[in-house]
Length: 334
Ligand code: KG4
Ligand code: ZN
Image 1 (cartoon, rainbow, N blue to C red):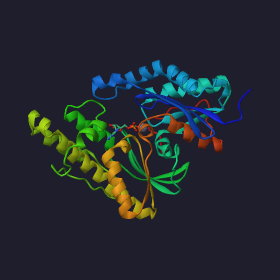
Image 2 (cartoon, rainbow, N blue to C red):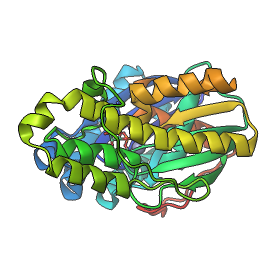
Image 3 (cartoon, helix red, strand yellow):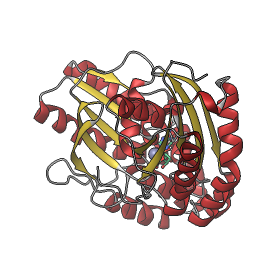
Image 4 (cartoon, protein in one colour):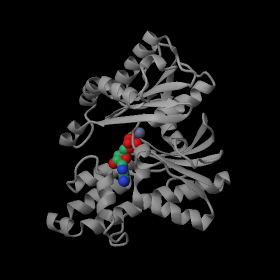
């Protein structure tokens, strides 16, 4: 007999993480993420290899998520999945699997927007933000300022016009010969460095937009002129200085967004939200401007299915179900 507690399985496969989570009555009861180390060899995500790895991982990951939740698939009321944005081949694996499961169990399918899910990661554990609030969403593929009016009503106030900040972190790490993805390594080395040791040019874009291509090029030119020995000796200072410049660009625009929207509630989301310097600087701003701030726990900042599950749970409340013909959308409008 199907349990009366609303139980949803969610699947995430937009990039290089195969993930599944189970949510019951709005509480995450299991959350499994399988990363794909194969991309480390190539210094970036290889789309076809990502799709192949999702294909190999999806059944074990879903099986583990159901086992960890101690439920049988027949107890599920709906299947949520990431519709986009992301890599097409990677998205297709999650999409087809979710549809097949929903079809065989004869339960609704829920198509979730990956960036909206990153924002709703702020609602997985208490304390949670009150509406409306401004969210700075910073990942490997996106950098956005979003005005969040409700769980499902959001408006992009501004965004990057070229690279995402996570992409800039990763390219900069690569230029210093670090592994992929390098964002967390810059964060790690920067902890012992001086953020004022080197000066990198900051780009101020009109309105609430961002641009990270200029600072990336400036960093490439800086590194070209330095010897490997210099970079090694000054690694902590270089990491701290470039990280401080990137974080400053993010937070300058966040301050503008908060002033324009006249809110006092601010959240972070996405993989770069795990950055310790960004979090520390946000806390300083929060006490200066009297903001209430929210940052998801690190496993909910980087790609995961718990964030897809909480979004699917809220979509279920308004019966926002998707037909079994729903396509994957590599570029999915907000
Ligand atoms: O949200 P996410 O897992 O995937 C996308 O949707 O893109 O974000 C991945 C990005 C990568 O660029 C990674 O380097 C960055 O998040 N990242 C960090 C940190 N942890 C992950 N960047 C800076 N500092 C960190 N601690
Ligand atoms: Zn993501």
